[in-house]
Length: 435
RNA sequence: GGCGCUAUCGUCUAGCCUGAUCUAGGACGCUGCCCUCUCAAGGCAGAAACACGGGUUUAAAUCCCGUUAGCGCUACCA
Image 1 (tube, helix red, strand yellow):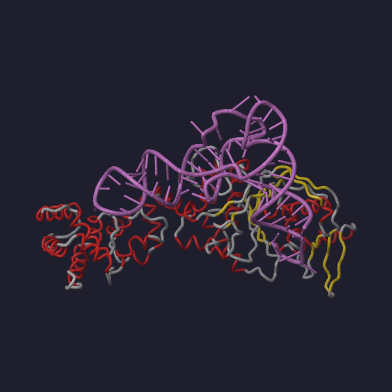
Image 2 (image 1 turned 90 degrees about the vertical axis):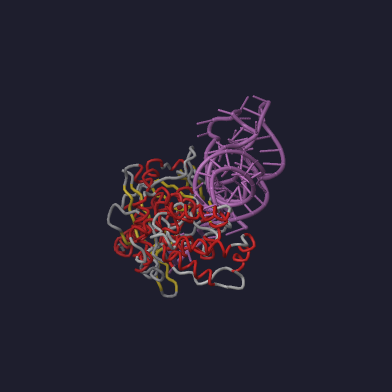
């Protein structure tokens, strides 16, 4: 039975590297029909908090990477660690060290060439005579990471330890603990690390390192996981878009890369856009509506739906809807005069056109049919003997305050007759000396 | 410093194990074109890499050695 675990330490928010480690553990477990477990390593009493722990567990839930068994906390297993440590002292493999009146326990480090076969790196050898005797119980009575980790993995019957490369050099130490305890060590797979865009270790300096950030930006869990899977893992084919289920099916430790990878925000955003696009209209609308609860209330269900669909191919994150469609949510308070001027020089008869258009459009009962508005606009252009775009571009600017938007007529039908004519009249009333 | 890991386009990667099929494939980003009411989306095209130096071999991105660089460990942090 394959059993793996993700063992975060609640000394901070779940970060990108942690998510990737959790993901690969999950993928391997599910691919092999095994179990994925979660263990909270809260042996650092100074830095561990319940708040971080809850946040991490909640984040894993959001990602869909749930533990198959009850979550284990190291702080609840102190008895066990002390018991094993005491046995080691009794057998003479560990000893007390008193410093500043505080007592800690150290395990004698066996001196030998320690080799193990890493599932990612292959054969790795260390000379353990270079290591100090390992502190196993700190003077505060808590076990050190190394000691607790080994005992838990053994007690939880973990078959494969899949963790970051930063633990590669720790592995021989762990192996020596297993050896003096007379326990069988699990198999190891050390994952390459995720670095910042500049190739340096991921840190706050890089800005977005916590998963929370990506949640708030409106990333889909599946898309984020998909991107992370692509870092340090490749397939023979050219497929890059994967759902979690597809990743589970295709995952293999053999395809894990040996070298560190840099996090590329652009590609991550692109993939999220791809996932958004692949969502069914219903799912997309549900996600957006949940994210934009407040804005939703400003529109009828039918209009809201129409609005969202207009931007489905244009948004990369749920949050970016605001960048694309901000003008739908709030009235325009001002226009960019530079663009205004450019438009004016391109279309000198702009005011005349718009006034004519308003005159024609106000006769329409409503703006519900974009084909109707389009026909009206093209007729108007024909009336002046100019191309339709000479009407469309100024109209777009007056309506959206931007030179970029989805199809103008669809946009107008979403905004509605009253709002559109209101904006146009406001625009025409602006800067009479320029117009 | 010591020990360990790693090294293909700017970035993520395929190829490396089992040398010849690699004038090195895909993706993001970038540039151009098409579509077109603008922008996106989509389609097409393009620029862009085997870190360096030795060696083995008829033949090396692929195997070996060294150099360099990056990263990790070297805590009573995990």
